[in-house]
Image (cartoon, rainbow, N blue to C red; front, side):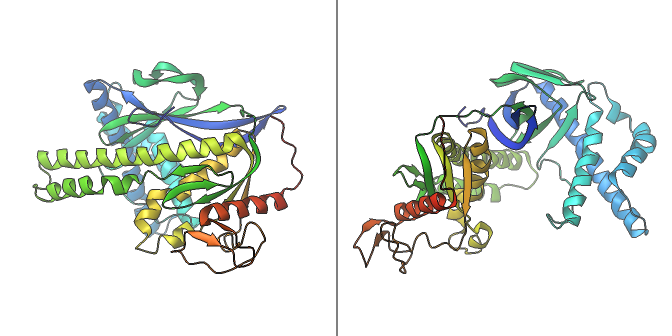
Length: 390
């Protein structure tokens, strides 16, 4: 599937054993084809989910300030018994009641991540910002397949693209740039592909998205740079409009759609590159880049974000499992750019030098290709005994 406004985004995030086979849990996200009444219904669900989450967060803070130790189970029980009965609009016809349950689960996860030091303190949700909600069928599987899905209580909804015939325990519906998307997880078996090469080193860059040790180069589309002029013009137009007016809201939607388009271009290039790499190579060597530290350089932060380094690694991590490969993460201090891929001579090289010229053996080669070849050598030393069966 190609990425576009109606495209699916597959994210494999779990591997478990089922009998003699490894089972992958993968997810797909695709755009919904809704009527006007269905869009209103989705907005109501998202509003109830947002209200429940914010109520839970405010109550949690009040209880904590009173010296108590709240949890999302206690809040959910109180909400269902005391608050829900006096709010008839939550039980309106066509509203799935499971949304409040998942809202409290999300609140519990947010606090757990905060206490574990993985995220900041939970914040209140705002209307129109990251609208989403999750529902299930009370423990029963939800059938998925084709271009129509029957959601619990909500009923039949259509999609722009055909989905695989499978089942899922729950679905999440979210809004991006005025359009609604559905995401769900389901099980698949790994697809072991025949490999063109045993080993490959992958060097990531800004001018070029990725350079393989085999000589294959993936071009960086530089989506943000290409859309920067239009984005600035739209933002200047937004600044001249009255905040909160209808024209202001329409202009914000235009900007959101442009951001979505740029993100789709960026993700499409990343998906195509990572899929090719993982399908055709048994062992993939990727450098452990300090992306968060690199982003502190404000001169390069925009270009680095546009290059999608973190997303590139994340996709390689799950796709090598899906296609039967192995990933080797090379230490970030390994001098892949400074080492000659022919004789092993290590010498200093500035960022301005795009060609590596070895002072010992006189090798002259593109610096990124030289780095990728060194990453491949690192992989061969780390995993010398490889038996590739296509």
